[in-house]
Image 1: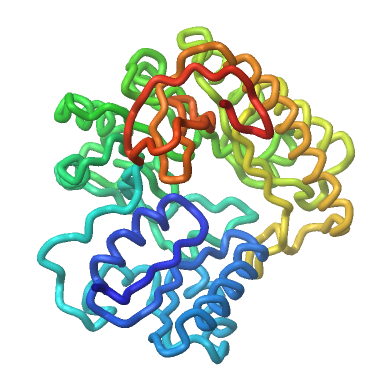
Image 2: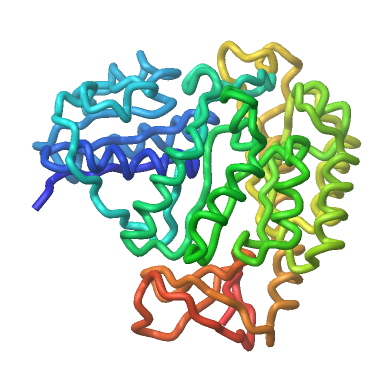
Length: 390
């Protein structure tokens, strides 16, 4: 029995990479923290996970990889609990772990298989340190992605999630620069037995026409679009050096909902970005209702060393905290109304191991006791309570 343990923090890309790391270190007495550094809170959680892992496994070797292992290298290396750091760019290389290349991957432990089709980022958003930890954008070739999908399907995964740091930049570094829609179409065409394909966070301005049509009309592409939105006011978006404006997001969502009304919208939003006024914050709040954001990831802004935003006039921390709470409350109100609208409607639900599952539009749904994880069943909820359909 393997003594290896991998603790994954942060994004879905880390989850996908953690599966690979688990197969690399399967025969080692080791704990790996696959860290995140997207915010100072993420770094704090990384340090907390390191301490917790050391208390639970005092005799195991404890190694840290992920973005924080590069961006906060000195801070983490100084922790007495840490035995070593593995560079983020090397974490999928068996040589970095000083182990032989595994003959067969360890089967996934997730009902949803996360496949990292892209890594790194070529953009320079003023608040973001992730390019420092992930490097330039790199794409898997279509054949490589198909191999990964096939492996997960053979292991019984009913749903595949395509993920990456900047997924919509997939293909920009490949010959003929194929758009992301071409990859998604290839997966669907090659594997008619694939029941559910989900996309992780996307940059709306880069959704190509083919991908749009697949979202709009292909039943196996889940009706769940999570946007890397970040803010609802044009001036703040420009200061963030984002490539879209408010109206771009509104137009995209309106066109999608016109073709597929059941599509659920998620978004990342930052509260308290430097120079954010009351007017800017009001626009951030109002876009939640305008887009109908039901899956909201709210990030209180925290300055990251070496980024342009860290040199801009900062907002007081208590005000940032208050604005983040208001954004979360707005999302909760929209989400509650959305969940109520799903009561009485049959939903296709992929079950997890905790007595619940996720519908195609990513609503959390209670399922009958003793339902095996990884099952797909139809549930017609009769009520919505505390964010759970039952």
